[in-house]
Amino acid sequence: MTIEQAQESVDNWIKTTGVRYFNELTNTAILMEEVGEVARIMSRKYGEQSFKKSDEEVNLADEMADVLFVLICLANQTGIDLNEALIKNLEKKTIRDADRHKNNEKLK
Image (cartoon, rainbow, N blue to C red; front, side):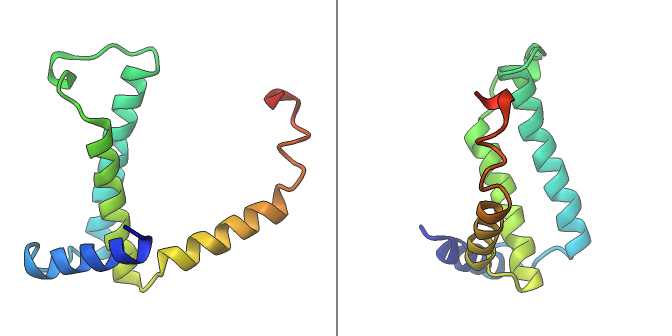
């Protein structure tokens, strides 16, 4: 699935199953909540925290997909073409960071 197809699929899902988009502020809060769930899993699986009994059935891929879904909702609501935005962002990073990471002693 391309990014464009993902945006179309999410929009279709919202219009047929989700009834309507939550407003942008609500979706921003939901995005932060979903990112927090990813962070909790990462801190327990790869960090120093231990899993709680309630965390034993977590699914990192599903939680990341939740983040992506809400991000796509926000992009759709605000008229952002995520494919175009990502291309421009990668171009910006390539120009800005052309030598930055290669010269970073911490990465060698």
